[in-house]
Length: 259
Image (cartoon, rainbow, N blue to C red; front, side, top):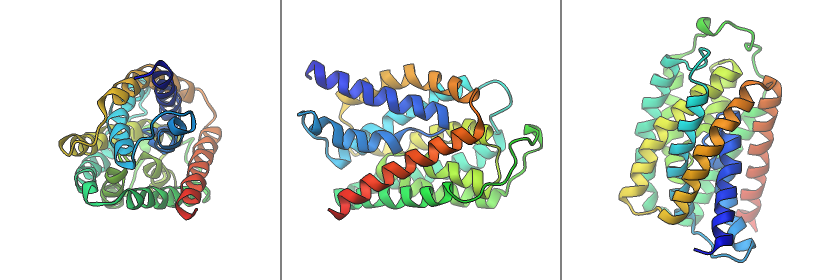
């Protein structure tokens, strides 16, 4: 691998993982389009959609570990929420990760674009004012939590994205989870989800290991830094950052599909 290519992949992983830790997503909503478009833009070989989804899947696994470690104290991790949504999204993501081999690259990109569109709409809906609620008093609908996570897991497993970019809007808008608890719990759920999607990508040989290892190293450095920054930020600012990231990514992926 060329030195410039290594630096490019590292920076993509670092930026995506920093934002991942800060706003509670696995980072694929950012890294997926960056991996797809930036290397060829700089004159390097382009990854296929299957390769990008494979690299994204295994990178998310390690990025979320770093974020969880930073949020391990303070009561932000809701164990019940993590259990119900984590198990459901794990099953769904394995099905999606394994089944993605039968889809064309265009279909993988369409699935990604549809997920991002739904997430964008949800992020701009009015959100319940629950951020001042004591964390030990948070309640949620377990049936909705489990069923929504299963559906998201299937779709997210297809693109190797772990699904946090749509699980976050579900937690904030539908389940009425306080923002920073949603961020911390989302990282844990995404970690569980990434086990299924990563295993599915490995056994179907969709991971390019050189770039994947570079992304993993960047993730382990950047995700804890982002999580510590996020813990000290205003919750409204975190919500807007997440919403705008999803919106920009959605516009880009749809414009390329339509073009």
